[in-house]
Length: 156
Image 1 (spheres, one colour):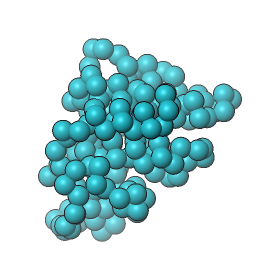
Image 2 (cartoon, helix red, strand yellow):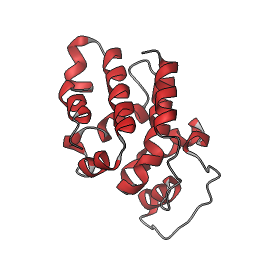
Image 3 (tube, helix red, strand yellow):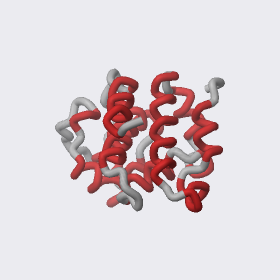
């Protein structure tokens, strides 16, 4: 699959995801100052409108997002990562792959179940694409086949 086709697959699968109540800006504040009561105004109303610079600047805050906010931000991170595809990828790509790895994200099963089959397919396609870019000797440390298989299971 070409990068362009994969980006389109992600866009179509996640097109109707609404903006969450708890945003990445709030997660960034919680991460930096430990105060979730701080609010920032974010200009995006669709995940497609999130600029690359914002994703790069707030990638560490992703870990502070509740699972309910993931479906809005995951596609933005995936598209960013596809556009910046060559390994070693930016920290944002590594964080995303880490987050999509079941052993690293306790809430991943719940998140996976909240996605539609088309959205899960987009995640599987993304992980497979990222795996194809890694030299064979590093594939099981970067993007494990077992993690892709887990995402592709039909019993979500």
